[in-house]
Image 1 (tube, rainbow, N blue to C red):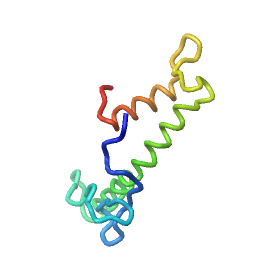
Image 2 (cartoon, rainbow, N blue to C red):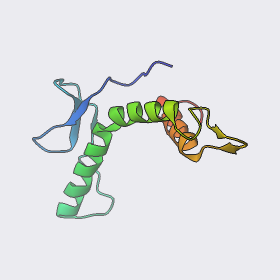
Image 3 (spheres, rainbow, N blue to C red):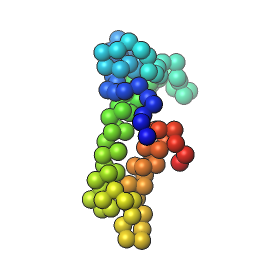
Image 4 (tube, one colour):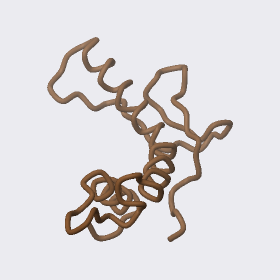
Length: 104
C-alpha cells in the first residue's frame, strides 16, 4: 500500500520547536503548541518540543519498521517462528498498519 502521508523527511521548526514541516517545505504537518496536559511553564514547553521531535521522526521510523519487519533474523519477515508469533515483527507490523490507517 502506498503511503498517504506527506513524504518525509520532516523537521521541527527551530524558531519555536513545536511546529513540524517537511524539510525545506512550508506546509505545516503538525503543531504541538497549546497542549498542556496540566503541566506548567517550562514543563509544557519541554513536553511540546519532545512531542514535535517524535512526530518529525515518524517517516523515518515507519521506513525503519518496514525494513526491520521484512528482514527479521528470527522469522525472515514471516511473523512466525515455528508455531509461535515473532513478537518483534508482530509489534512492528501492527505499528505499520496503524501508521497507514489500516485495521489493526
